Image 1 (spheres, rainbow, N blue to C red):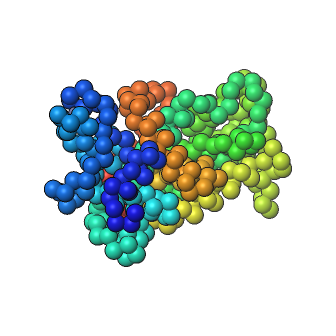
Image 2 (cartoon, helix red, strand yellow; image 1 turned 90 degrees about the vertical axis):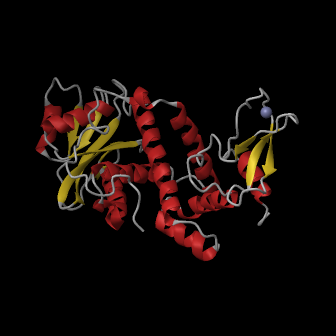
Image 3 (cartoon, rainbow, N blue to C red; image 1 turned 30 degrees about the vertical axis):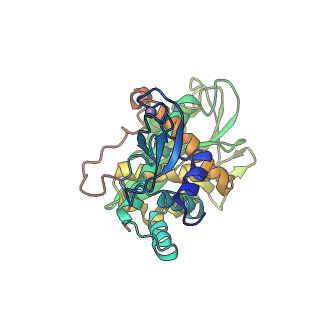
Length: 328
Ligand SMILES: [Zn+2]
């Protein structure tokens, strides 16, 4: 199967990575994968199997790959392999494709692929966050909240705010220039209804939780000597998340303006949430979320009550890397 584009295309089609046309202009709904000898780059296409019609459609039609300039089927297959092996790192993927597989493509294309993947993940997490609250009213569950300072762009500093379900370990992350009471209040009430227990450190931005009217029960512990509390009454899970997220951000992501920076944060979140999956399952999941994200209109995602999603920070400096593509 190494050199045969049709075998590649059939495998990718069977796995659901290629979608194909839904219906032909002639009304026919059946298509064959057809070897296209006319074009070097489009090695295959879908062909209407009505013998009177035989219209052809690009092999990437309706799929994740449809807007990419290079639609070579073998390249798509190799990108899938890179996705498996390297997960999202465009620089490594480019090196892998060109050095090890002798398949010459532009770094721009690879960057585009990975940027598109990141955009889909951002949209998907947004859908998930809006449809599933972390803590429902009066559930009396334990949640830990914490903030962590990040140097993100040209010396600017930003707080990452995190809230984690201490039992299921599910979590939400947002970013803000502030960690004052009103910011933290908005963050907590966005994700966790009252009637739950909030574990915090001694930071006075959480003082509102102690008011009898807040509806939350605050469990506070004083930082120091590595004390993050014990068992469910602990912030150790969120402390662990900071270590993971900051480790990844340090690599290079802090160089990008806010919008792009948040894309990387979402990517790391997604990776942490899906690290239990094996390689095959990761690809499957990605294409599932691609379908989900594609089926929901952007306008349906606007939530005026939640300023943490997207609109919280305004970057006046938009000089570089607006597209979110990686430099390699
Ligand atoms: Zn037709």
